[in-house]
Image 1 (cartoon, rainbow, N blue to C red):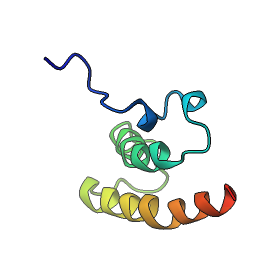
Image 2 (image 1 turned 180 degrees about the vertical axis):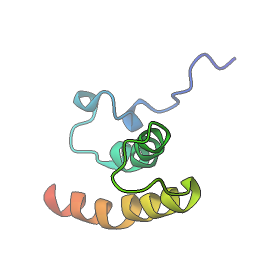
Image 3 (image 1 turned 45 degrees about the vertical axis):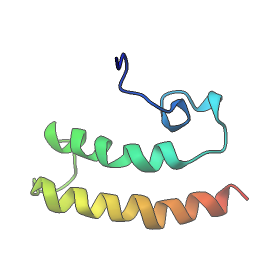
Length: 74
């Protein structure tokens, strides 16, 4: 029986104190935050289509953001 959605607490962006220095939770949560901002129309500029926006954010999160986070942590 599954009691919770979270299967790995190390991947929770809500509790960074449990695994300091691990940036993967933020990389994984960024598309969710972008989708939430899109839904509430809080993104700058004209409203875009959701799918292309999420593809762009996922690319950024897993490439540029991840690389820069890794460099900052050294």
